[in-house]
Length: 208
Image 1 (spheres, rainbow, N blue to C red):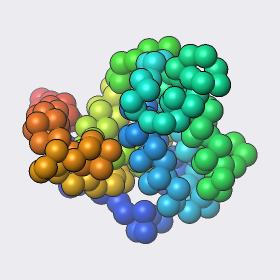
Image 2 (spheres, rainbow, N blue to C red):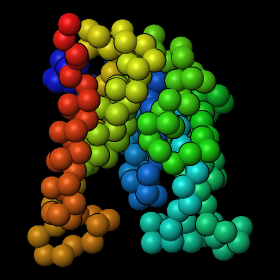
Image 3 (tube, rainbow, N blue to C red):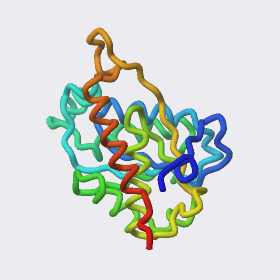
């Protein structure tokens, strides 16, 4: 069951060691927020930073860097392009050099299938510890989705609640029409609560 036992919230400051930091794609602003969280980690306490990303084409409204990419390349980036062009280098600047950063490109835009491809290519991840780096309000969904997909491959993954952790930032609720870059729309926040419930349900073990 996905609970305080099986999904532990871990602060960056409280991180002792993790075999892998994992975060997936999304809109560019969300990916930059995940980058910001990852840059707070001590590279010596993390085995690798692994980014399983799909082929969704990004939109110019997502971030100025998307527009910059289009000006340089004549097309808008996919999530994979964005990760390879910008995120890898910024993570290297933060100390995750050499083979510390691995972008796992997947020719799909479905979250479950992208994670299936990750564990198909990197099955050894299921025997170690994983810290999911995410952003509000997506934290429970991101960690719950990874756990559910991982346990389809290996039902023993995180069975004792000691392999999967999550780290997230926070965001204020918009009250006066503030921009989504800095505040969460109340309507989409309600939708996210329902998604969170769905992913909690997906992680309830089947009895018998």
